[in-house]
Image (cartoon, rainbow, N blue to C red; front, top):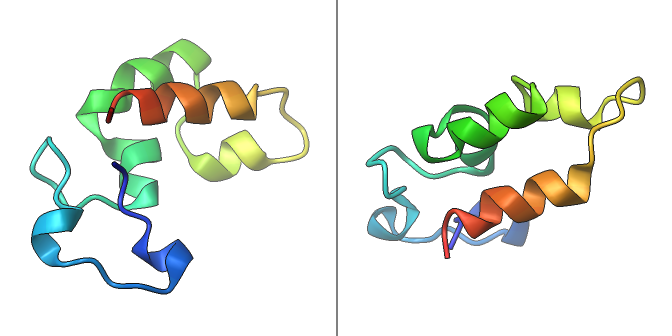
Length: 73
């Protein structure tokens, strides 16, 4: 499960926020820098979440998010 404390206005315990890669798990970590999702970044050729969401790109946002979250089932 991806920690989403910032989105839910809750603060999960530190142990609950650790990514399986041992880094602190945040939304940006999972989408931009986690080695577990690096293949997805490479496949879709993006380096940042803001790049995905920018108006001038044609990224399949839902597909990217689905694939990223699938890494943490």
